[in-house]
Image (tube, helix red, strand yellow):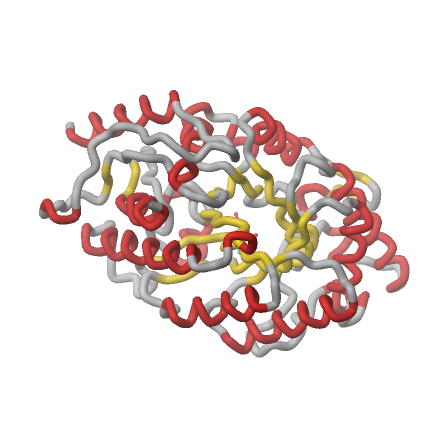
Length: 364
Ligand code: XIL
């Protein structure tokens, strides 16, 4: 019964309030359980939405189909002022054949964003895990391969010119030991391919922000240093790069916050903008939980609080914002990969987890 009341209450709140990039004020009245009240609930009724509470954009990974569901879109509208396509701006989705593009789902995401004054972060022009068959099994020469990749990057960037604020130009080009990942792009184009992709993207849209995006940058100093060295090389050679996306697929206890801060500092000291681009927190890496306990939910609330506190220390001009990799726990990509977990801010029935409160409190 209690759950039903809360769910209805949340639904009423979300249908009336939305965020825009320019607003940051005003709360929504609603009772908020207090940590001191011997609370045991894993969900709560929010007093404020994420994007209203934050001084920088707060994003979520979405799909066109999900945004077509009014209830889902209502929560996204209320809570987030930035969106990233979880998959639908990747090459395997857009590139049907050389010179042939399917824009439909990506355009639907942009249409949602335009209607709701929401920023779109483009993800990702090149990623070795999202290859259309013609790229994976390319039969022409290396020169022909490179010409097709340049055409693809420039076609996509031009298509979304003025609509997408930023792009992850290359995603995950570096291995854990700091070496180049042996992708089809490296094989056909050689080690300097990342730099060339950034130049092509900038040529196609001088106004779009360009990011390098990768995982484990906050947990693996060797990888973070390799990324920093690559980006420093770009800066020295005049290769256009604006920022770094630290994916932040993290666990509830690791990496230690000091380690995350060390990695962030490497990039901020280089003058780069930092995006926490794909946040989720695994609570059940050791597979001991079969349901979300209050203790685990509280640990997640505190963990997200410390992550956002850390992010808040970044100079304002270098804060691109933070993006959660999905809305509800049941949608997370981690479930099919690692098994049962509760990595996000909302339950399957759109209830607000106390993790949401951890983020809000750190914003305030
Ligand atoms: C994931 C999506 O969440 C899944 O739906 C898809 O099956 C595979 O890709 N790093 C990235 C994201 O940069 O694009 C990935 O997204 C998660 C890891």
